[in-house]
Length: 495
Image (cartoon, rainbow, N blue to C red; front, top):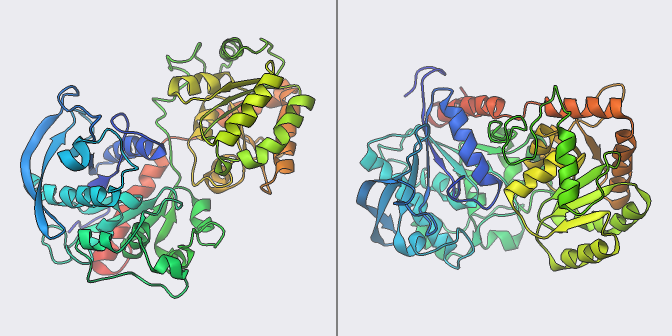
């Protein structure tokens, strides 16, 4: 057992995706950055995920480190293999199973997803025996890995390899809980436990298996991706039915902001944007703006602010309050709009209609590409993010890093990261409450009005660009929480 907070920990980090190998959203970016930052603090952290069919181990230079090993699964024994990526600064392992992962090109949305990810979790734990590597902490993420916390209080409770191991469970988005029927407990070897009923949870949720709910109940420490979101999910409005369980465990719940890879997202070195610049010298940014206007078929005009959005076209991203006021904004506010994303067909149709009606004011790209996103952000003056809920958000962090001043709904991580401009203090952006169309309209007008005061606008841009959006502070917080979790597991007292 570690004897001091400075003792290096062995940490196994579970994630269903990681850049650059498998990605559908922000989880992959977090998994690709946070463990690297933690290794710089001295811990031996390793990442493990499935080897999906689109990942070609030979082409990517993977090394097969375990040919086959046994994995208890349901009432039988399956076999798996283990690959390791060639990354020099972070060990990344891949669980090999042809039927469940190798034969599938996608990551999610298969009818047997529950079985797939339960197998991945069990195989990951068993693989550590063959590596002869004992973790102090299992850091699990989202519903796909939540069952591990349950296992360490049951199947693995007396296992010498995991008897002292603590579980940290991170909720990235409470909306995706991994809800399945009783059959999942049979697959996981937990049928004797049955459903976990809570007197204050809705009866419908008590009659299913919420894998995320089990992660919350059994983990030693629960984290989520911003302090505000950690408070919000304790309420019925944000708790997605799990708020009673979260309130029961709020003494174990912590909100830690995500960061971004500031080496990857650096306007001073980014080769995907037309010109490079930094907070001390923004002159070259005008070239990014003029080239974006030209690329999008907009009038090249430095005096006209460019407002951009880059997200899923979905009501949770704020399109339900944007659509009623977008045409009035196009009619009455002298600004250009660039919108990129895919999503609900009704928003595709409405935006196509507005693009056809205002082709010189609204540019539309119904797609998603990271290089295009960078060009949009580096060439925009204002980045709009009116999400109904946003546990943390990464795009506003990237926008601030690139000098695109964010306008956000003050929720979750948006409230924690964007400081509203409130003279005489210089903020890093603009935020609005309540969540409605007129509040959004007013915030956009406020931003456009200040854009026409270059000296003030320049101060806001610099304030945004100088915010610390790196993983340095979050990694230190996780570093401390790992020790707290380990102490709680083994002594019943926080470190």
